[in-house]
Amino acid sequence: MYAGVESGGTKIVCAVSHDPEQLVARTSFPTGIDPQAAVIKMAEFFREQEEKHDEIEAIGFGSFGPCDPNPSSDRFGYVTSTPKPGWQHFDVISALRDALKGKGLSGDVPIPFDTDVNAAALAEHRCGAGRAVDCFAYFTVGTGIGGGALESGRLLHGLIHPEMGHIRIPRPASEIEAFDGVCPYHGDCWEGVAAGPAIAARWGERGENLPAQHPAWDLEAAYLAAGLHAIVCTLSPGRIAVGGGVGLAPGLLERVRPLLLKSLANYVDSPVLLERIDEYLVPAATGADAGVIGAMLLAEQALSEK
Ligand code: ZN
Image (cartoon, rainbow, N blue to C red; front, top):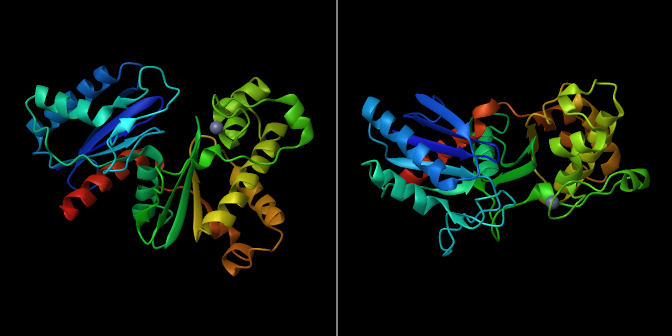
């Protein structure tokens, strides 16, 4: 049996299954500010599931970032420079192994580790909107903006892992005047002006409470188009899927598509983009469990490589 952990900024989802696309059991709890308590809850859930079902052979772990997913790094398995209290520079994988042993489970199973957004990108590629797309990019726009990309079925890592939500985008002068952005590191990076907390800070109301005709949505569409312009020009993805509470807001992608085309100005000359943009820039299809499904796919990959 595979296990998966999606450790997000606000909640942690754990699940087990024999087939990553069909969960046998799942649970979720707030991420909180005590990572030690969180790994004990994960281990308790996995012990219950082993007792009820089957032995766990590998646990895929998708974590909020920044984190270190490089297996040859001496900080592999760490959450690193996160602004999240309690979690900075925390070796979450070693702590989970200790918690598993504390609950009488094997602490030595493979625990592949990646970002939560890379895990979700993997799930979206395997069983969602990215199926059969060779170079695929996935974004979640919600409490933050995260992006993951795959080329020939492999997730892109590079130096550590992409942090596409923190690119800089052009902003109208009136907006630079009106709003500084909310990213604790960069102020008005993409996430700092276009993720859910930025919408709430800019307009004094959460996005889901803003009507479709509110100017917030025109600005949001313009910001998403600006960021995606940079992604199209750097990664040249064959398709882009967008998920997340903000990204899936009704009608938003329909507004982004013409703005993206206008911004690219026919320079990226592909019929996929120019003639079929509604099949190019698409809503994510795997839903709220994308991260934990992707974590189990990481576990499956690790076992097959072993
Ligand atoms: Zn930032």
